[in-house]
Image 1 (cartoon, rainbow, N blue to C red):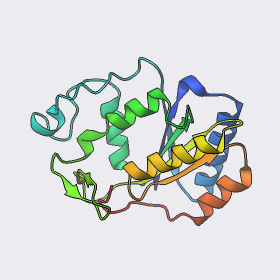
Image 2 (image 1 turned 60 degrees about the horizontal axis):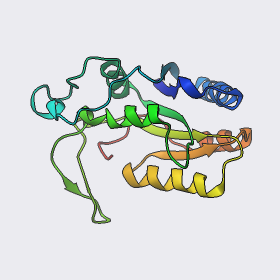
Image 3 (image 1 turned 90 degrees about the vertical axis):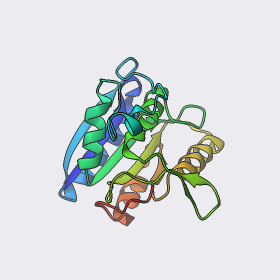
Length: 186
C-alpha cells in the first residue's frame, strides 16, 4: 500500500521532525511504502480560477508546476497525509495553496450535502484516505478547535487532529483509523 505525505518545508521545526518520524514509524508498521513531498514558498503557482482543469484539460491543471505530480500521487495513494503548522487556527499558506490546487480531482457539478451545503463530486470512484495533521507548540485551544472545525466542514470523511508533541495521541489516532482507499465522498 502507498502513503504520500505533503508538508510545508518552510515550517520544519523540531516538533515537525518528531511528528514526521512518528508518522513514518507508524506507517512502516502498517506496511506502507511512504513518499514524502515538501512544498515551500514559490514552489507552486496560485490557482488562477480559470477552470481549465474542468473544461480544457479535464483532470489536469493548466499551470505547469509540481502540483501536477502531487495530484497524480494523491490519486495513486491509498493514504494521503497533509502536515501543516497551525497558523492562527488555519493551514499554512503553502498547504492552503496545495489544497486550493486540488480541484482537478473534482467535477464541475454540484451536489447537496446532508447538511444542506453544496459540494463538487469526486472525479474518481476511489480516493485515498485523507489525514490532515496540524502541529504547533503552545497552541491555544481556540486555534486547535478552529483548525479542526474548518477542516471537517470542507472535507467529509477526512481525519483531522492537531499534534503538539504527544506521542500517545498520534499513536492512538493511527491505531483507531482504517487505512486504504475510500469511496468518492469528499
